[in-house]
Each structure stands twice: as structure tokens, then as C-alpha cells.
Image 1 (spheres, helix red, strand yellow):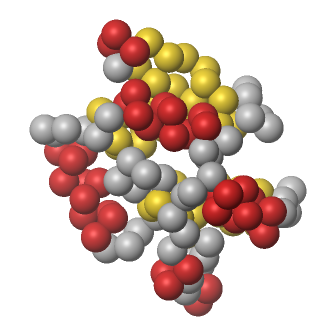
Image 2 (cartoon, rainbow, N blue to C red):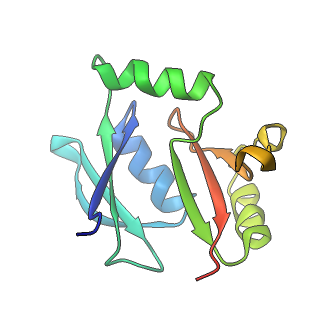
Image 3 (cartoon, rainbow, N blue to C red):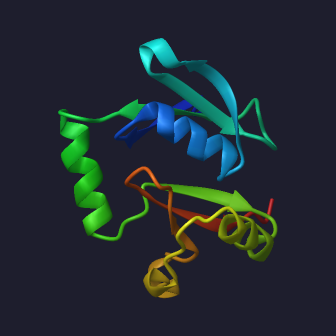
Length: 127
């Protein structure tokens, strides 16, 4: 077995789709604005794990998202071979970086805000 789809809570899937594809570098896999369905994939591994940008307003996911954010916990980890380059791309796209959350002894580094209410982090891809 392998993971094929994960869900990330967002307040507005349409806005999240725009941010994830235009600022974070993901590729759209499925997008149906009328039904607020937004699924993105890695631009470098489009057949890999898909990310459902799950609307969370008014559901238990809303309190989960808020709790994770307030606890400074990244909701998803991404891998990149060149983290410095990715960080520069994110800065250029206007993404808010959170260097104050770097805590290598906990395994948390390179944290940034996705602009949709979540913290994400980039890890070194050594594979």
C-alpha cells in the first residue's frame, strides 16, 4: 500500500488552489470551482500523493486547523533537494516564512505559512 491522497484543511478551497498552484508551486490535478473541489499534486512528482484542499468552515477540521496553527505545528511536510532555493522562491512569491519556529532538536525547520491557515515545512530530500 501507499498513500494516494491526503487532506489539508483550508478556509476557502478556491483561494487555496490559487495559492498552492501560483505561490507554492503545486500543479492542479482536479479543480471544480462550482463544487469547491480542489486537488493539487507536486509539479515534480505529479503521479505522487495528491493533496485535497478540504473546506473546513463549520466542521471539526476548523478547530483542528486552528489548534495546530496556534501550537506552531506544521500540518504537512514537503521535501526538496535544495531547501535554500525553495525558500528563496517562497520569499519571492510573498509567502510568510517562520524562522522563529526552527527547532532542529524537535525535527522542525523551514516552516512557512501556506496563506490558508496552515503551517507547512520543508525537509531535505536525500533520496
